[in-house]
Image 1: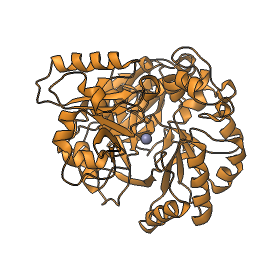
Image 2: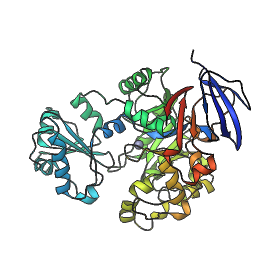
Image 3: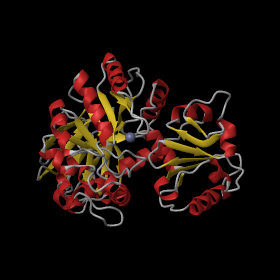
Image 4: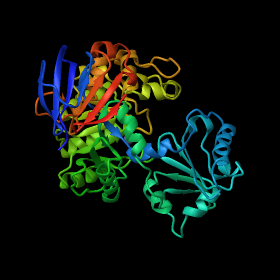
Length: 461
Ligand SMILES: [Zn+2]
């Protein structure tokens, strides 16, 4: 039994209140509640529901925190320099894992490019989308067996190019390394006021789910966990089972019948369905598949990277929720401005127009492929401004309070009502330094004073 915690003088819906937390729940809300041994003066700071990241990849993000970051690298030479710098502090038998390589800047690389670094280390480099791994020759020697699967790309003469497309599951079995610790990542998320996460990895099956459950049980993962997966999952007290994840391969769009078959499998497991839709083609085939099998409340479109206005009515009628990444405009906006054709630019990571069309939206980070600070995303939703100050889709701006709301919905109903701070509700809370309207004038993670998950303080500034 945990001790009661009293938060005094918190701004709640515009008024100053005391909030008493007991046994993981909100036990009382009022003015001048009786003092307890354990209390905290909010001094007028807003108390809001803890934020929920509706789309993240936990293990990949934790691995990213321990990897060489190539996101700012603009030439092959700079890539080799970054690898050599990383190698200098690592014994030659250790892997060098590098991420966020941008093929649109450097060109499509292969193993010969990595071998040119002249290093004895096995090296693997992931592209910015997560679809491609490039391995050097030392790395290929470690992972290739007699019968490599089709994800291992080959040249005309049958030699592996070093490129492995959407081969994470196979690669993981060949690397047999322990998964990275979630401790550091979870603490970072807590410092943003995040009390719950939805892991959206299609690669999750029973083994990965067991590892995540363990991380939760051992206090490595402080946030509540809602879990998508590719394969069926066993129930666990440490996570809630979310939608089945379907991820069409952008390089070779599947037949409609394939997607329908995957959806039927999900339904046979009594699952909701979440489909990765970045391109207009992916969205069109996904909607056709939902039209064929019927959608249920809680079915979702992940990302909604390009949504032509002509598809609004179809999405709305099906009742699908669009789980989008507002921070992508900040993270990737400069590249979008270069790579996305002008006629598709209005369709890019829409916010306001979806709302106006009556389509439910929610937000997630898609970390490690996007920044995992929700306050950065909230800021970007209001200004639609890229890292280099370019504005994309000004008419898609929404108010900061509405953007915050995209993180305040419940995991199983991301497009539904905001969770409320009420007696009896789970004590998943975020305490800010100032009243909410002040905090939202300049949305930033430095506003977060404390984070409480399941009644426990998991972060204190
Ligand atoms: Zn994702």
